[in-house]
Image (cartoon, rainbow over the protein chains, first blue to last red):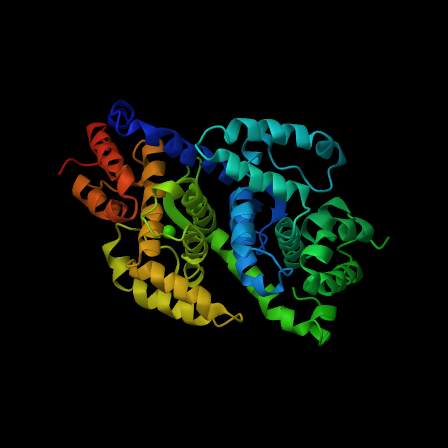
Length: 204
Length: 204
Ligand SMILES: [Ca+2]
């Protein structure tokens, strides 16, 4: 796509890698997740999911752990799934896919973040998210779990029901909310119990 | 969806508006824009578009006008299209739709931003974006124009070709890039001229 005048003009050439990267990341819109939209019309993709949780980081900012830098969390969430452009989305309850996910995502990061100047700063945010140890990463991970929980509740069990998931597995999956969004944790536990009562989640 | 334990527990009830809002904004994923994805497989929606340009705000941060607060721009871009949940997307070259767009969007903002505590801060960001007068809003608007330009180039003219758009109209549409992302403006003009040469944009 990078048109001829653009590629040939030495004054414009330095822009080419960044504009090419802007199109490269468009591919995240084509990475399908398992989660259904709230209206049940289709599954969501990783780009719109990233928008959703970055926006939730703003909406729930006053519930973030003390010391959280919400703007940093937003940046982290915008890039947290970029590696899926190469590695695809790995379903949370897919034990096999999870075993080699790290290796696939690391290869993807090696390629993607080398494409632009300053890519290593974005990569560092993704690595921090993935480690999940800083306050910022804890808040970010909590939001990344909360959104599919809400969507599963909105779609009468969604992927939980599709895959026959049990209460203990949902609780484990949602555990990052206990530390990253503690104010919401009792509500999450109540919602999971409601989902069991409704038959959307197994009662183990 | 807001499950019975959650709605009935007075300790959890204050969370309900925020969790309901989190599901309300999921509807932005269902608002279709005219622009095609870079791979031409389908048109994009406003949620993934918002993700795309918020991420571009990070990737192109070093080209932002002096004094730009990039984190503020990111926040602005995350919410800039929320009013489309009620008002829909108005195509840039649709003269009729544009006449009442402001009124429709203002009504949408009245409803949406009243749903959550702190909504007026998010609304102020949207209004600043819409006015396009501050340095932050200028950078934000430039990104909002750049992304569809790149997607139209990637899809051999995309919506320009579909609607027989002329060079002068594309230039006018892209004008916010001249002030908000001046370093890229010569590249944009070159790309538009290339698009005319390729027959994707009319030559007027
Ligand atoms: Ca827009």
